[in-house]
Image (cartoon, rainbow, N blue to C red; front, side):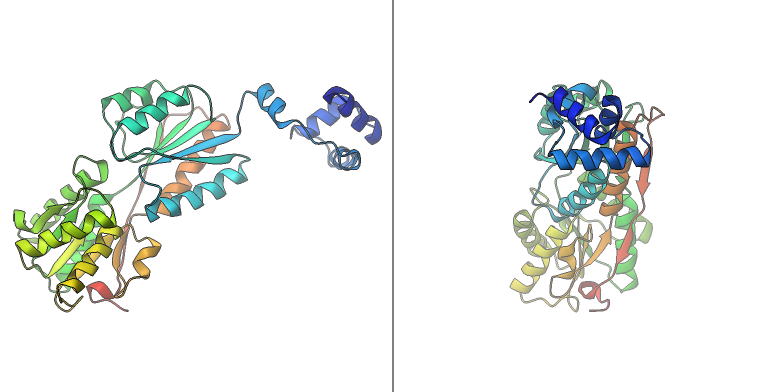
Length: 335
């Protein structure tokens, strides 16, 4: 039986026109009475709309992509949950993509996006070079970037204020009597690495703290595995009374290395992470961490993209989510 005859049977069963059936089945406005009759008749006849044909008619895939550098990072796990909830409410499915640390991954994804495999993209890149910027300028589909973009790039963006977050951590540690505060960062050629280093240097300068090179170590990645040798290098080079880490994975690595060296946390060395992921509350001692608003950033990004997909054509929005500090036992706070 063809789709046309099936719609005709539904219309006949419901006692309405074929046009009314089509409106209801395609989610267009119809009176409550007609909607109820069409849905009841469709159920009685076992009719289900051909979703692929509908997508061809409206020119949409009903899919949204979320692209991140590392799907194993718990901050992206939290973001994915939030974005999934938002886009499902908007009638879309979410596809996940892992781009890796460099700019080539986002660049390839932006190129593939021209093939219309999704209707829109939420991109959270670690690196953004001029090639990526040019692709964003020439985008054909709605895109929202979780991160910073140049002012002249016509896409919505939602970013964290990492520099303020680092300052909050430093001020807390100074209030706890810590003066030699080491910094374990991720790669500084990434967006978060550069922002958090700038926040550390400026924060230490404002608070009158030393920023000797021996207090600063760069891990090969923002991962737990990369954090272990980085934390060991810090302790080989100096004896800090606190370690600030650029994310929670590096912070957990620092906790374990301090335990390995026989140092007590926080009595000998305080530790603070960033991102305030679920992981921070699972460590012993629990990890003090800067909440960079990952869930709120994800929610706002999804809402901005859905608004574009709904037809909004206003100027790009630049949203900044302010950080907060969650004090736990690793820095002398409550257990």
